[in-house]
Image (cartoon, one colour):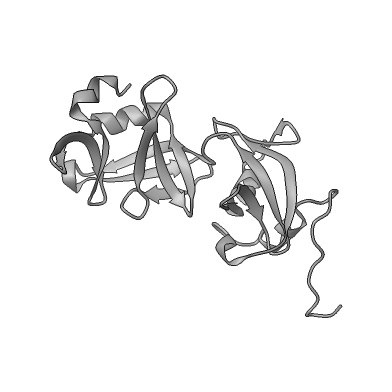
Length: 199
């Protein structure tokens, strides 16, 4: 075989043939460096609770979910799984990851928070991997942590209560805001006047 020959693109019977090329790596693959052809959508979905589905069936093997997660990327148009030879679109109902464990070191402005995702990535919450708070369906707030690229983890509700219990008021641009510190940064949740609506 010619060493310069390009691998054939994915076909309908083998939409993720390029996974073999990344299976031996640890952690996220360098998907930001790869620009293979787009090969269409596959029947893969990440549900709101973080469960991955393929052809309508939950993927029960954590190692397989971790492999898929390692090649996940957010393109401007869609979420995609990217290998050196193909790029395929998938559906993400909310965030691609779920925050399932939260560790705290220190207190107040000196505290540092670490989040574990459902695929066992540990994230140090800081300016590099910030927290954001978006309106929830029931009028409360939904916290998210940036994992990498444009990929966020939705923080489980029980952990959100921990964030609130570790929070404090701080003046931000002349307005008293309630939020939480981590890694030297303050992440505002909402104005203090709205604190009763947090949960």
